[in-house]
Length: 200
Image (tube, rainbow, N blue to C red; front, side, top):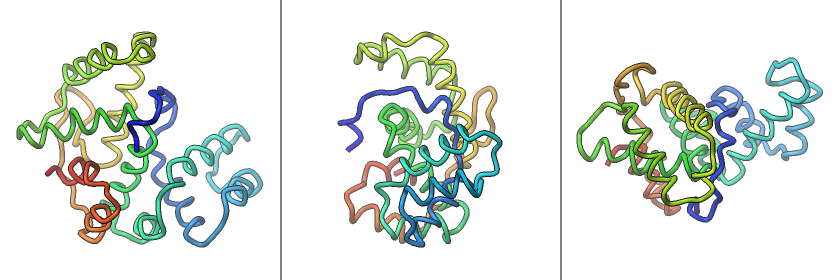
């Protein structure tokens, strides 16, 4: 469960990676192992990036996000409709980043509950201040770290399709997700993620 994870800020240099994650999910779905995918990333440049460091970083990030997803969910990322596929990539990020999950559950989900469909700068500020009070580790981060976290959270949510715009008071977009996926997440005990993704 996410709550057992340490808080970290590495997400600030790791964007949504939708197409890259979909590509890795496809290779995993075909039965390739992590070391084989990393090898493809380096020697076949499957992500079409210039440096070896970047090839390794994208492979490592996407594999880390997908490692706990079962065959059903991997298949839906690869072959599902675009909205569901993006929601599952968002789910994979929440599963591997405690602070992002808590933001999504405590702030984003709450927006649906309150029928307040705008994500403001104030929402971010209140959330980060709250986490500073709860965690010495988060409290030790520099202001610039929170600035970058806010930037990447907004970008991820926009690319996932759940934010209509990235500037000002950002309007939240309720997104369709395949009922089979919702049912499957319920069956594996991920009710909290459904509440975030479906807005219920």
